[in-house]
Image (cartoon, rainbow, N blue to C red):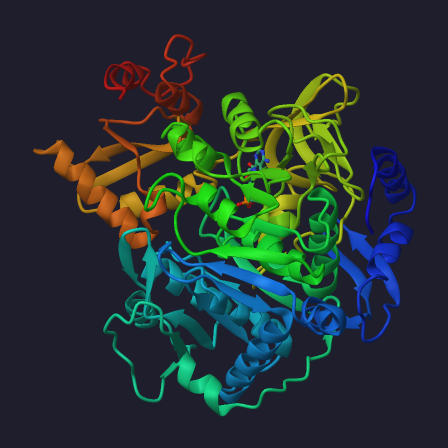
Amino acid sequence: MRIKTFEQYQTAYQQSVEDPEGFWAEVAQEFQWKKPWKRVLDWNFTEPNVKWFEGGKLNITENALDRHLADKADQPAIIWEPNDPEDEAATITYRVLYDRVCRFANVLKKYGIQKGDRVCIYLPMVPELAIAVLACARIGAIHSVVFGGFSARSIADRINDAGCKMVITSDGAFRGAKVIPMKETVDDALEKCSTVQHVIVMTRTRTPISMLKGRDHWWEEEVKHVDANCPAEEMDAEDVLFILYTSGSTGKPKGVVHTCGGYMVYATYTFANVFQYEPGEIHFCTADIGWITGHSYIVYGPLCYGGTSLMFEGVPTWPDAGRFWQIVEKHKVDILYTAPTAIRSLMSFGLQYVKDHDLSSLKKLGSVGEPINEEAWHWFKHNIGKDRCALVDTWWQTETGGIMITSLAGLTPEKPTYAGLPLPGVQLMLVDENGQEIEGNDVSGNLCIKYPWPGMVRTTYGDHERCRQAYFSTYPGRYFTGDGCLRDEDGYYRITGRVDDVINVSGHRIGTAEVENAINMHLGVVESAVVGYPHGIKGQGIYAYIITETKPDDPEMFRKDIAATVTRVIGPIARPDKVQFVSGLPKTRSGKIMRRILRKVAEGDITNLGDTSTLLDPAIVDEIKDGAL
Ligand code: WTA
C-alpha cells in the first residue's frame, strides 16, 4: 500500500480511477480479515447506498492490536504526555494496550453492552479514551465520542439521538491551569436521557463527584475483576464502527456514520502514505479524539499501521507557549500534525518560545482543519520545520473519514496555502451553481466528489434522508463537500472555505443555525442572525446580529449573558465573539435573511453591498452599517 515516489503516486492515481475496485481490493488485502469479501463495491449516489467489501468479516482491533503482537509487542503503541509537564509521561506498548483494551471490553460486556449497542464516550485526552474506543470496537459496540468542550445539553442530545446505553467519562479533566468537571456535566445530561443504564467513571482529577449506586461504576475497580481475554467480535465490513456528530448548515448536529471495513482501509492507507510513516517514528497529532482527526490519526490509522502515536492531554499555551516544542524535544517527535489556529496562536507569542527547544527530530509537518494562510504556512515551515521538513496541508472532513486532498510528505511538490492533489481513489470535480462541471485548470467552483472512496460517510444515524439531503441533493449524483475551491494552472487544489452556513472557528465546525437557536432561547431575544468573519487567530470568529424586545440597558452585560446561554446550550466553543444589537435584519420580501449583507458588514467591507433593492426595508442596511463592530 505504500507509495514511495511521485511517479508511483501518479501510477496509483491512474489505476485507482481506471479500476477503483481492483485498486482498493489490493490495498484491503494487506489487512487481516476473518473472511474475504464477496464484492468490492456496490454503490449509487441517489439513495445514497455505498457498500465496500461486502460480506467481508473483520474486527478492526485485530488489525490495530492482535496482528502487531507477533513482532511489535514491546513497541510503544501510545505515548501519553500529561497536561502538566512535571507529571510523568506514560508509554503503552502494543502488548499492554491489547491487554487493557480486552479487560475494558469485558467490563462493557459485564454491564450488558453487546454488538450494535451505542456507547457515549466523554473523556479528556487520557489513554483511557483510546482504550474505551478500541474496547467498543472489540465487542462490536458503536462508539460515539463527544468532545470534552460540549455542554450537558449537547451531550444529552447526542445520547438521545443515538440511544446510548452507556456513558464512559472521568471525574474531571485537566486543561492547562484549569480543572474541568466531566462527571458532573454527564450527570446533568443524564437528567434528560432515559436510555443510559450504566456510567463508567475513570479517575483523573479526583474531584468529589456523585456516584449513584447501581448506575455509576469506577473504571479502576471494574477492570480488576474481569477476565484478561476478550475474543474480537466478528463484524461485517459494513457494520457500523462509530458515530461522530458534526454540524451542518441546518438543524442539530448529525451523527455521521462510519463502517468497519472501508474506514479501516482508508484511515490506514492515508496515514501511511500522507505522512510517509516509517517504522519507529513518533507521530504527534495534536487534535482531540473528540474530533475525526483524532479518530483517524491518533487512534485507528497509526495503530492499524503498527505505528507509535503520541497523545497529549493539555493545551499548546500552558505552562507557556513552548509546550508543543518541549514535547517534540522530549519525545523526539518525527511527525507533527496540527491546526492552523494553533500555529497562528503560537506565532503570536514570538520565537522566544521556540528557540530553546531542539526540534531536530522533526521530519514531517502537517496541517488540518481550515485553510492555512500564507504567513502561518511559512512560519511553520521555516521556524518549526527549519525548512528541511516536509509540510502537508491535508483537506478532508468528518464525512470523508480520512484525508482526501494533500501532498505526500516529501514526494509531491508543496505550494503554500494549497492542499495539493487528490489522493488515489479520490475523484474530484468543481461545479458551478447549476451543477455544471467546470473543466480545465485555473478555475474555481464548488467542490464535489463523483465516485465513492472506502472511508466515506454511509448515513446519518437514524435519518438516512438527512444524509441524502445534506450531501447528495444539491448536485444530484455527486457528493457535495460544502467547500469552495480553486484549481490552479497546475491542477493543484486550494480550498477557499465553506460556501454553506457552516463556520469554522479554530478548526471547529459550527452551524450558524445552531448558534442562532441557542441565542434565540435567551430571555428578551426576538431574533438573531449569525455569520462568520475573518479572525486573526481563530480563522473565523462568530458575529451575531440580535434583535431584542427592548433596547438593552446594559449592552455589555447582555452580551455576557448571551454568551452564558450559548455556553450552556452548546458549549464555550460556540460563544459569539461579537454581538451587534439591531432593530431589524435585512430580509427579502419573502422573508429570507440576506446573509451576504451581514457577512460583508461583519468582514468590515461595507463599500459594495451589492443589490439591496429587493429588501423589504432597505433602510435597515444603513443602521447595521453604522453600528458595525
Ligand atoms: C475545513 C476536519 C482548508 C473544510 C478534518 C472542511 C479545511 C471542514 C482543511 C471539515 C484544509 C479541513 N484546508 N479547509 N486543509 N481541512 N478544512 O469535519 O471547510 O471538522 O469542509 O473535519 O474543515 O471539518 P471537519
